[in-house]
Image 1 (tube, rainbow, N blue to C red):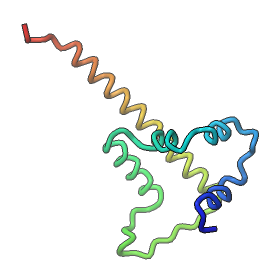
Image 2 (tube, one colour; image 1 turned 90 degrees about the vertical axis):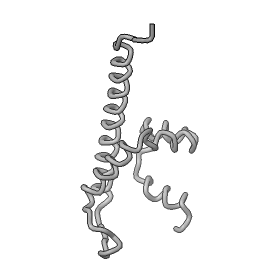
Image 3 (cartoon, rainbow, N blue to C red; image 1 turned 60 degrees about the horizontal axis):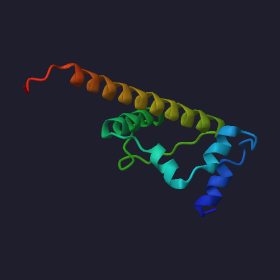
Length: 112
């Protein structure tokens, strides 16, 4: 099972084929999935990285032999938590950008 597509198939084998979200994700091109998976800013990426490290434990792997064992159900919960955190951070990033643009528009121009 060294083939990435075989690993993907085994990980998602338990997903109900009637699941419309699963079907939608399957219909997306790999480029679209890659684009949706990447945060727009380094700050969001760093916050997500810290969140996941906090959930898994922050021991440096170069100094410790770190091994994490879990069930499929708990791994699914971890993935859902990471996705929700990323969704929240992306929304916060969009709101911050929107507020900054509104503030820039509201500032009177001194270039007369």
